[in-house]
Amino acid sequence: MSILPHPLAPALGQEIPVITEADRPAAPVARYAMGRWLGGVAYRVELNLLITAIAAAGALAAALATVGLQGLRSAAASPAISLRNE
Image: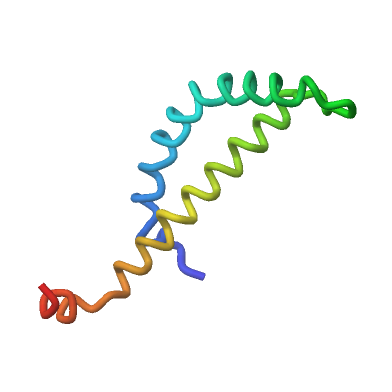
């Protein structure tokens, strides 16, 4: 195990504030919409902050996985093949 950080760590670190800023206004809207949607269900689940936090963490994990995999894919691509196709 290396002490040096992964080469994609700076790119992933730059994405975290963007994702959290996007989640800040979206969370109350989603919570309101889910409350309205679940309001008519007979066996409804009470929405609490834990469910919202879990959903936000899931969105953050999905976004970081997407950015990380795309970064690895572009890092592994051969520049010669990319230039040949242009």
